[in-house]
Length: 359
Ligand code: SF4
Ligand code: SF4
View 1 (cartoon, rainbow, N blue to C red):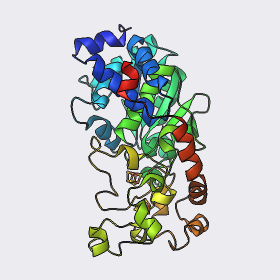
View 2: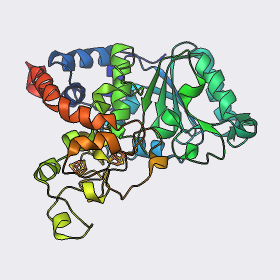
View 3: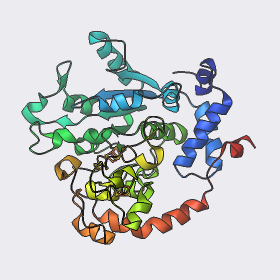
């Protein structure tokens, strides 16, 4: 067992101010009350680094790339100092028998306490032969590792919903983690790939409160997936004014008009891209000129029509009846109707600032 986290952070030169700022930002992103930032800081500083085992299954390594391609030093980098990442094939130095031994020891020494992260889907076809590690199928590995897990994080759309491997005709018989494991708490963090700060935010919540955050009906943390891309899109005023780019290089596109008619699925996609952005808050897909593909919704690849508008924007509420992204259509009408309510509710919690924490 490692020492308290604060010892590790101090050794690595992380200042109290930086740590408080990180916790304040995280609490604010999760729409927690102002006092939560300090509470998170205290809980995280005193906590011991929990064992985390990360198993990659039928995947492209995009999720790992996402969480590691962060600027340095970063809050994402900090979170890696807050956990004991005991097994992650892509990141660990060990290989072969040494790697297998590390996995075995981590599972045995931390039985019942470790956090299990899975990225990639689980292929069931041909007795799981499509994806094996050390001669064992992903299905076998998942069932074995899940037994001793306190909770499971399904990282990315493949682990959450099957993702692209499960897309029609699903040649490998791919399924999601929750299709297999029914007796453990599971949080889905979908996205292709998921946003780094969302991944680390969920881990930080687990460290602070010892439990998974509140989830929506698709198993996603509400703090990050509670609103649609469209709810918070900076191009939204143009949508409301009926100003739409018709091609990717017309005057409307150059003026930053709404990408709805170019196929943007923001109105039916729940994710935090519009608020957290990507690459350290530099930009995000819609800001760089491309519509949202809906990658954090189940079966987004089969829904397709990436460059086809959902419906006529003249009557946004009609979208609910015609949206093509499976399972998300009703969200359009709901998101419009609830937007004012959500804004009012959020105002009840003033944003957490560093000043609040340093009082
Ligand atoms: S349709 Fe897309 S580009 Fe237009 S406001 Fe909504 S999310 Fe933004
Ligand atoms: S903008 Fe849409 S498609 Fe792009 S990463 Fe965010 S949720 Fe996925």
